[in-house]
Each structure stands twice: as structure tokens, then as C-alpha cells.
Length: 190
Image (cartoon, rainbow, N blue to C red):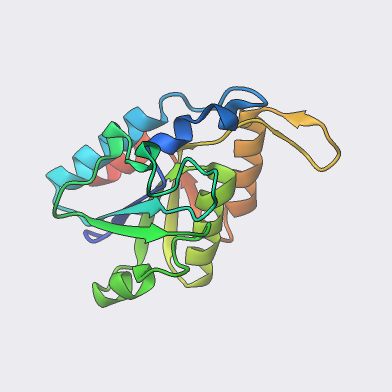
């Protein structure tokens, strides 16, 4: 994997307490139980090296969503808690680029490389990565710092969280992003 520029930005998507809502696990457990630990390791490295960090927060407008700003579950998970000087963008749709100033913020800082972690692999992560790729960003998706849940496919067959995750990664690999892991990313900035 090619090295990361000094201003490669760590983009953490929707890692909020809402992801613990039992509704997400209706069809089975999630994959990558170590994802939060990996996000914390990435954050520690980015902070140590004083690299840019952006936290994306989902601000749902859906009446029953655990991601609504008026719910306690709207808070960031402890492993992904932003520091006061770190950038936070709130979004109300899947892509972190829609209805936010994210693209302007990145371009004003001449940032071209994004290292992406967060949730849900096949939802906001995939949508944001596709959008970033289409905008011309060099995206590195950290597959073991993201996770998803089991889901029924269009034919009604239950797919495990790992299957859903792997298919999403396959959709993104090459055209939209370079798929990588925490160890490889940390090695590029050590």
C-alpha cells in the first residue's frame, strides 16, 4: 500500500451509542467485535502525529431513530469521542458529503486522502466512500475498524454480518477505495 500523506484525514462515521440499539441485531450479531478498539488505536495514532481528524455524527430526523439528537443514544461512543479541537459534522442522510461542509473543509485544507472507519459498512460507510471516490478523493477503507449486521437479501435469505460486510467491501474495492486494515494503516504512519 502506498504511504499516506501527512494530511491524510481520519474520517470516523456515525460511531455513536445508537449503534447499540437492539433493533440492529434483530437478524443476528454484528461482525468485527474489535472495531471500536481499532478505531481507538487509529485515533490515538492520528492524535499523536497531529494529523487531521473528522467525526461524522448522524442526526436523524426519523421519529423512532436512536440517532435522533434528542436521545441519549445520539452521543458518540467512548472509543470515538471527539476532543474539543476536532472537527465534527452532523448529517441527516447516509453520505457525509450531503448537507454538510465536509467537501469544502477538506478542499480548503488541500486534503486528498481519507482513511475511513465507522458504521454501518453497507450503509453510511459505503455511501460516503462511494461519494468520496466520485469526488476524486483517495480513500483507504479500514475494514476491521468498520462493522455491520446480518441482513436478509432481496430473496429473503439471511446473510451473516460478515457476508454483508464482505460484499460491501467488494463493491468498493478498486473503483472507490483501497481496502486495508488497522495494522497496515498504523504501519504507514509509525
